Image (cartoon, rainbow, N blue to C red; front, side, top):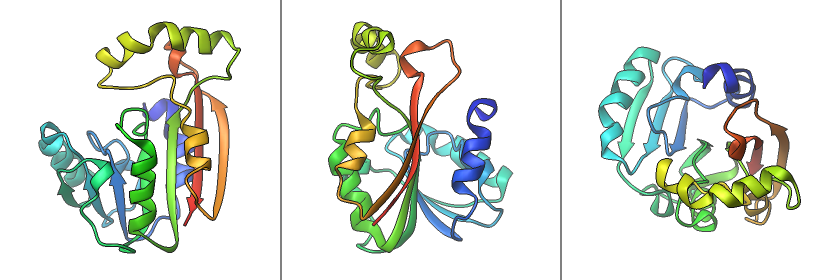
Length: 187
């Protein structure tokens, strides 16, 4: 995934604060894009990732706090985060508007939410037809991933004060995840 997303993530995460929150960190794929010594408060409901997260945090010099919680119920105080990041997460959460509400709740005034997500293709495109065809089996094989979720629109409707969002196509043989967005949403 680094070869596919590396440059974009490096640009997106380059000016991060010394402490940030990551929702759905999985196996810690974003740690390589953070400065050594960064403190990352990880919101990760899958306890099975704990060992690999600790290993990768050590490898990249990340100070790690793991919260075994879903992103719909972030166990952090209001206004406690300068930045929240996510990549390839909002497709699989149960309630994306609730997650974004939680992100806004924990962000400080002018705090930033940085994201990279695959999204639903344009309505009448052949990719959208493929997404609709494989939707149910894709969820089963890929841990609840919803390839027909209009994540870009959900973010735009979440009530952030400013959003800079880019659409791009991902070079992959996995047709359902070709369309992507990356952006910064400011509280």
